[in-house]
Amino acid sequence: MTPSDQPLVEIDRLTVGFPSTEGWIHAVSGVSLAVARGETLALVGESGCGKTLTALSILRLVPPPGQILSGSIRFDGREITTLAEAEMRLVRGARIGLVFQEPLTALNPVLTIGWQIEETLRVHRMTTPDPRARALALLAEVAVDDPARRIDEYAHQLSGGLRQRALIAMALACRPALLIADEPTTALDVTVQAEILNLLMRLKVKHGLALLLITHDLGVVAQTADRVAVMHAGRIVEEAPVRTLFRTPQHPYTVGLLREAARRVTR
Amino acid sequence: MTGDLREKGDRPLFGSDSSRKGACPLFPLIDVRDLVKTYARGGRLLRRSGDVLAVDRVSFAIEEGETFGLVGESGSGKSTTGRCILRLVEPTHGEIRFRGENVLAFSRERLRRARREMQMIFPDPYSSLNPRMRVGTIVEEPLVIHGLGTRPERQARVAELFQLVGLASSMSRRYPHELSGGQCQRIGLARALALNPSFIVCDEPISALDLPLQTQVVELLLDLQQRLGLTYLFIAHDLRLVERVCTRVAVMYRGRIVELASASRLFEAPHHPYTRALLSAVPVPDPERRTTGLTFDPSTFNPSAELCEVAPEHWAAV
Image 1: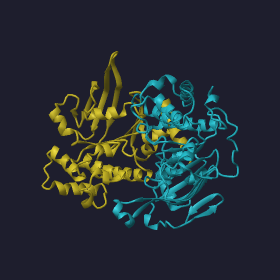
Image 2 (image 1 turned 120 degrees about the horizontal axis):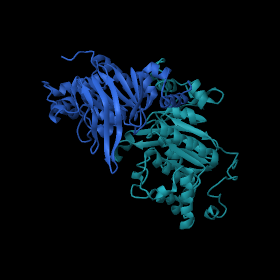
Image 3 (image 1 turned 90 degrees about the horizontal axis):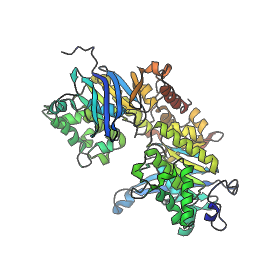
Image 4 (image 1 turned 45 degrees about the vertical axis):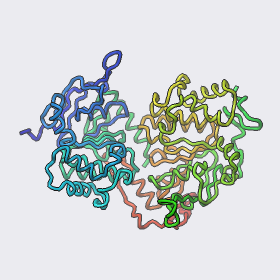
């Protein structure tokens, strides 16, 4: 029905605001972005620049009292901003998966990993004859060693890398078309970070996932993204294919970020 | 004014300090020898059956004015090593000398005085500050505990410390939750500086902050080092940061130091296969160059290998 050359996500002049005594404060102002099917778009910027809020808007999870004030978000050809909540639930977590920065707080400490993966299937009424088998398969897919043991373990029994893998398994449970990963490796050791990034890249190719990667690490961007959008103070200041952006950055803010990143690696 | 805060025969609490430079040229500032820390696995009853070796026969020395880096993945024993030096964790075995004096033999009272010289900055700026105390009180607390100065003197010192770490002194009335992560870390730093220490263990001081803030805090740490003649033990898993700020670096793996060299040497010519794997895992900020991603096979790790000098001042356990 939807032509495949149409972007999977199309954000048009999105403005997200928070009320204050002097009216609305725009945390995201007039952001336009597109993510194609199977593409990795990196959204780069420092904390507070609005990158996470932009991503949360796609899921309609802007924390109140903040709200989407204007603009349009189309996902797979459908307007998200006006979708009924019941319909939104069929998109959120099902068609769009989300991987958080801090896997320990994103996982429920009193439920097993397996239970939480199966919960995703239950909530979205995925008809699976054997949810446990599906959860096991998902854990195997995210390269968890010995999934038969891990499935009955709790978050505190897992290392940071394993927790992040479990979260990715949950995000993949309903076979989404888009995966939003918000600083997925910031809390991890470099060696584990490399493993998780490789895993995301592998899954992306295997399932034709589009990936919206939110990060402040330009090393991660250089190694994974197809295109980059740089955000600063609620606006996109520059957007380009990754090689173009690193070779010929246009905006002074981008130039500064790149210089900062280069300064920290002499090799 | 701050001169009054001085105890008899002590160094002044603040300002340029001539007594510090070359105070004890005979000894390194910190000398760690054969440090071992084991933790009991499971309950007390099963104690004998399997202790975890968190730190395994670690030796190194830190010279005055140096920034010594300890790197490794989580669980490698780097934080435990840092805490053992300050005796926040009691070592199981080994020797720790501060200006030639055996820290492990210190009495409670001597240790308390030693803590004026040795301070710590914690990894998580929020959770290391008491949420119910105003940040000014937090910074003042070390002075109160060590019984230094009168109230007005201490407050003047707090104002001075705020200025030193780049915060407006009007902020002292606020609570930690009212500050940003970067500001909280500055409070943690001001608290560490309150007693005018000569040595600070910085345990992942910026890993909770984002890049531009990291840069600011790092610049501040380096600036303070110059101005106050500080010596740092820098514990971090961010190799790029370590490369930038440290004079010498030790790489830890499973409680052992596997390599020790000057920062420039270590990053240019890593010797140990684990160090190579670690360095190759850092994503290169250049889309034209792929990260090589070497892997280290843990089964090849020999915990009993001793450090040998593979090049001048470059040691590796092979």
